[in-house]
Length: 93
Image 1 (tube, rainbow, N blue to C red):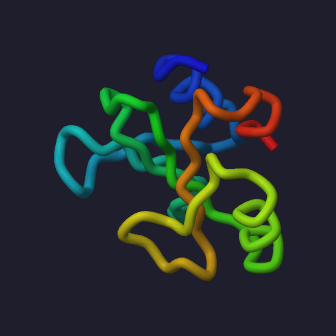
Image 2 (image 1 turned 90 degrees about the vertical axis):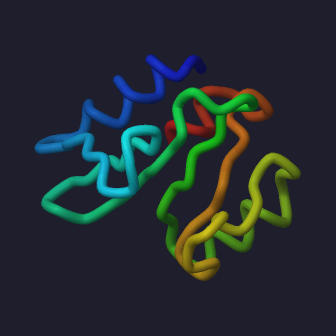
Image 3 (image 1 turned 90 degrees about the horizontal axis):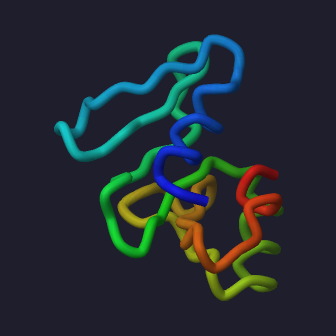
């Protein structure tokens, strides 16, 4: 998944917006004013912080090395995913 594909996917959700509250380099994706993803789309490797149900977040971290506790986020609800190390299907899920 490329940065453009990640942005397009995040904006496919109903009423999704892309905002830049943390500066011009960090894309924050929201639905109904609530953040669900954020990424420095120019970062290499491409990573995205994704909001997740707490139990699912822990399971994913245990199962996939590309999924880590959310960087600079509440570790209970957020995971950081290294995009290129997982199939696109999993990132979308």
